[in-house]
Length: 140
Image 1 (spheres, helix red, strand yellow):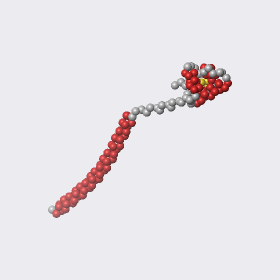
Image 2 (cartoon, one colour):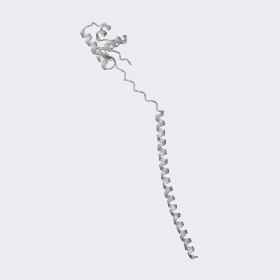
Image 3 (cartoon, rainbow, N blue to C red):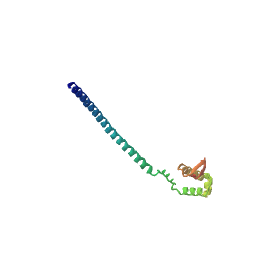
Image 4 (cartoon, rainbow, N blue to C red):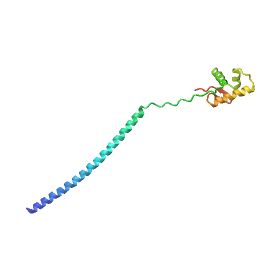
């Protein structure tokens, strides 16, 4: 009988040892589960932040293109007269034709002055020079 008790004692000791191993493995797995659960929570929070950001961005109004700056006409009254001439016509004009429409004497000095003013207006984008010496209002 003593031999059976030793065998039984050895079996019980082996079972206790195995139980300890399983308990240690279970604790290690629980620790891994805790770490993975924490990581999963972090990823869920990050995904929620992305969803909120996407929703916020989708609710923003579409940006409007900036309005083009208003073109400033020079202060000299001749520029207002030139613009009035072009407002009354629907085709391009040369400096000589603008002088005639403004009732200016058709003299080289007047034509050159009007041409310079037309060039200045074209440089500012107020007028368009469709070909050398031929001016018109720009079309949208």
